Length: 166
Image 1 (tube, rainbow, N blue to C red):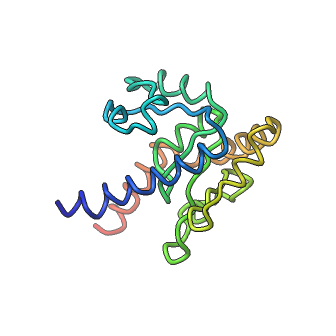
Image 2 (image 1 turned 90 degrees about the horizontal axis):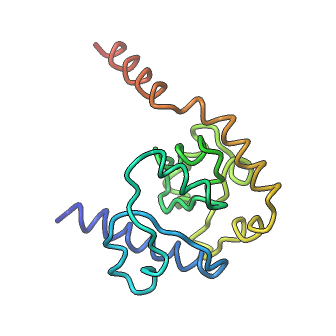
């Protein structure tokens, strides 16, 4: 119950906010995931299904211009998008959270597009939608950095941390 209230409910509100903002910029949106998206009248027409394999995920990502990340932080799906050569647009965290993207060396506007829910805008995304060269430059920048954030790098860091504390 605690997880549902503190995480899922907040995430649902954030997802709804992000989707509303994105739909104000473009109606060309594809949503992939579990079939529960069909329960949301505003979004069910954008639902394309559940993707089973990484190959299917990569193909779906590459068919779009931008992967929208409704989370404040980087995670495996954003890294997979970047590794596939796709531009990522991500929600900026409140100032009090700190920016995970900056902590790992990514720069807003250069390596990813910022979405500022607190200012209620997707200006960076809107300004790039028709600029394929800029989107490609951002994707290329991220691709150049993402190779330092693979599963192997994460496993090596865990092993180094374990060795340091044992």
